[in-house]
Amino acid sequence: MKRNVRVLWGVVAILVILGLVGFGHYIITYVTAIWTQGKSASDSPTGAWERDDGHFTVKDPDGNILFYTGHHLFEGDEYIDENDVRWVIQRVEGDTATAVSQGKMEALPDIGIAAAPVTTGKVAIYHTHSDESYIPGDGTDAIPGSGGIMKVGSSLADALRRTGLVPRHDTTSHDPHDARAYDRSRRTAQRLLRIERPLAMFDVHRDAGPPEPYLTEKRGEIVARAMIVVGRQNPKMQANLEFARRLKEAVNSKYPGLIKGILMGKADFNQDLFERSLLLEVGTEKTPRDAAERGARLIAEVVPSVLSATGPAAGRESGGAGRTIAWLVGVVVAGVFIYLWVSTGSWEEMKAKILGWFGTGGVKIRGGRGGEGEGS
Image: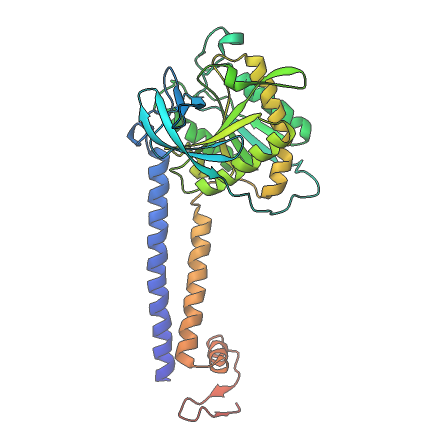
């Protein structure tokens, strides 16, 4: 009897300890979520993540131009070019950055492509910089609240719809185009994830720089090329990057060079919310808007096959309470099991003790030196 009481109190103590640990984990998760939802881009190391005007020119050590971008660049930022060569930026001086080759990326794991592309489910589209526009076509590089980038998003959505997917194109304005635009668009992204539960989510932008590197010809027409951007200060960076690489690989297999590369910048771009969240830069302010629309439509054609390779799970925000509770329950169950195993010393004694707790009777085990039992 005394032993049973000791065991019972021991179990209670373990449950209390595990409960406190789990509660602490929940509080940390909750506080972290609140902090990330309210964090300001102006407080981040990157400040305003994209330039207000002008662009950077990125060169290799021999002075050969690798790419142009309107994104702020920092030492440690990385770029994967269309040939899958990885470059790391080692120096930024004024408007020029120098990047050093790290060799070719390892091939993506062969996880198998589904026999048929994914043609059901939703894809979310929104625009952090809702004013971005194209001078050839819009007449200006910015239209507050309703930039030409919205039409590029609509073209992407229309093309996705033709594949069978259900696009959710959100045209919420996140103006002004300042360091806090990503704070405002974060609320839009969270709402899309919570309500729509998309298979993928794209924040569609246009880059800055000369038009020529961003233009190519496909199907007899001039189209704007795209660059994918992944935030490297992001706990989901590896998942985002794999999705980006698979999208680049699939698009360029069908339309060589249409995705010019993947930039990994010093930010998160709200991609910490979802594993299949990407930022797409389609053309620059100097490329024709209709070329950007055509480029977006071509990218949309391959999205179903990419989703088939990366799994059909619907989108969700990270850090949900449900996963915390599930984690806690799992820890409690494991803790009780380990405690009973250690305190009883055998599977039979542990089973008998559990049956005794629930009043199901069973074999009475005589604790003692010989471990002998007798029938009930």
